[in-house]
Image 1 (cartoon, rainbow, N blue to C red):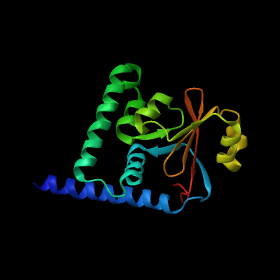
Image 2 (image 1 turned 90 degrees about the vertical axis):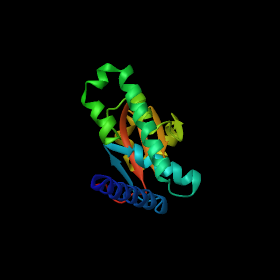
Image 3 (image 1 turned 180 degrees about the vertical axis):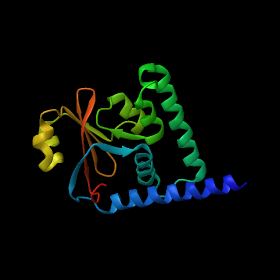
Length: 171
């Protein structure tokens, strides 16, 4: 009984933190760009898309269904990729749930699902990257965008750089 109550409080704190994170990103568009080594979390992208699509917070059942589906996607992916399943990446995928520089495209898709937009247009990528374009230009062949201002730059199949707009300085 006590562990169920503690889990309920932890779930509420988790949801409140995600709402605050998503809400801050939604109300501060056009903020300064920042370069990062870590992209958005699977939870952040899902919640932002849910809020955009439904205009409300998810219910406990909706959140539980998403978590089960997410875990199923990860386990299916790892069963098809035994070399990843026995590496540090498996922990990053299952526990941290965050896209990080160096990940492969298929790993990013498993975590964050399909991007909102994809472009290989150099002018569009230059405009999106702003002052960070000179160091990114060398290896940016494609850019994927996700909710809340996240831009992921790929060099072939590998995540090479991350830019986020509209967030306060990352810690």
